[in-house]
Length: 461
Ligand SMILES: Cc1cc2nc3c(=O)[nH]c(=O)nc-3n(C[C@H](O)[C@H](O)[C@H](O)COP(=O)(O)OP(=O)(O)OC[C@H]3O[C@@H](n4cnc5c(N)ncnc54)[C@H](O)[C@@H]3O)c2cc1C
Image (spheres, rainbow, N blue to C red):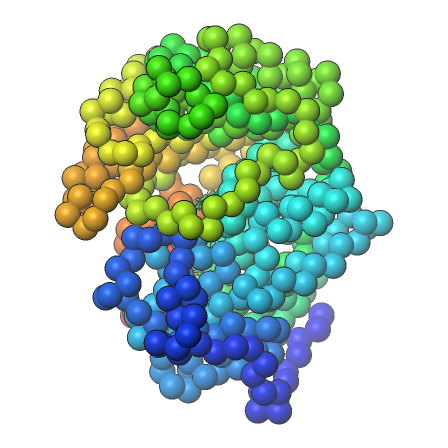
């Protein structure tokens, strides 16, 4: 165990600080989701920390000046947690060191890396850690919430590959956390979000994932095809993970014009084995209907991520849930709701889980939805604040129509939905266990501007 107590005054801040109105301010404060009104929510400063000492400096400064702060890695929080009005954004994006140990199949990654940067670097060695579906998402937020992506059925959630972490805690310590040192904290970091401190480095296990069969498959979205797609995804070998977006076909050049605006299943399939087994695994999906587009082919794993468009900043509302079955009637409900809206982008995203993710006991990590079979997200884009209420009403109604089981939520897809919804991310005894660990490591709830878990018996917010 290496608990380091450093004299903060002896190590000056090395990172950049940008204050409100200074050159580069507009760019620096921007996040992926453009939902937060920049007029009403504006930080005082953004500290681009360079190392763990800088993180502790920034925390000490915020504490001493009683300034609210938020931690930002990739800036993709759907709840708008990448920005804080009148406070400090502690930005990790200059911290991108990556130590890859090919021999031991592990990597230490600084917390400012995006999932795409990490995937490209380890992919050069034919290795991978499973993250999500979008390369610009940060490893920080994604990992701390769980991490559901293209390797979920083969290798589990991202947290199932998390071996260790270094974290700056509320009392100014820098802790090394692993199975032997602070195992309670390692358990909590595996799904408990940013509640326990600022993680400065993550250690991940690497898997040999080089040649895959994968890519985009676009099918007509009739209720029959949707239900059959989900059934095939559940029956598929666990090497195959799918993310199916049921949505009106965008007017993209590779889609024939007659399909634009009509409902399609816009699915990405990844068989993390490749070769003949991969071709065999995707064949049943191709046979469900005449594909409108079929880009599923042998490739390397990093190639599954399309290049990022840095200028893309949508305004969206969404709801997340878990489901257990999508039979014909449920698929019909999906089609009916999508057809009832005229939002420019509207979607029901269905991720079949199971496989390695489900083989981990629910109590082993702070992500406890291991038995749930499908993760579903419904979302709509809106244009301007006046358009938002009706899009909110639509997603609320759509989510209610699909709800099955315990109303559980995946914390990483939660918006700003209140404490009751955060609790639904942590079912059973998970919430109480997290609150107890929070009381040990952050009794004053310093890290509270997040999907917050209040310390057991702690102060009110
Ligand atoms: C387009 C898009 C696609 C997505 N796809 C997926 C997907 O496929 N799979 C999936 O699982 N999720 C997905 N997500 C959800 C994503 O995992 C969460 O939004 C996540 O919180 C984003 O992480 P970030 O670092 O980019 O965000 P940020 O906004 O930077 O961080 C979110 C929160 O995480 C905490 N945090 C981040 N880094 C640290 C750190 N180092 N230490 C302590 N706390 C920290 C903070 O509380 C922060 O407010 C997606 C989101 C978007 C917008």
